Length: 74
Image 1 (cartoon, rainbow, N blue to C red):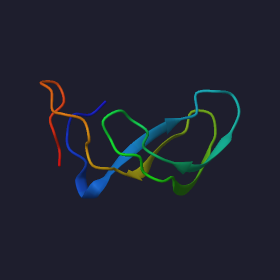
Image 2: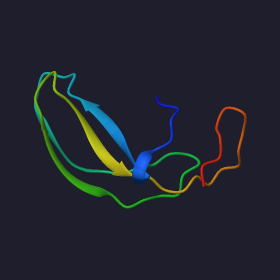
Image 3: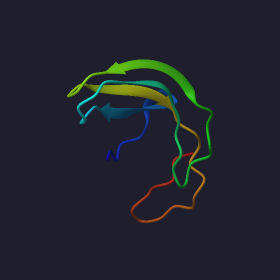
């Protein structure tokens, strides 16, 4: 959870392999209340148990009205 503004229209999605088997991530996308949908961003990230990778994802404009705990970023 971060409260700072995304720089350059991108943010990082942190993925951690907490299981016992490897896996691969092939795409990431933002799907969050208050943000316009964005298409998936292709990525290639191979994980083994314990590995942590921050994957870059483009952000979309903030679409929800401002509230005291969520500032409006336009």
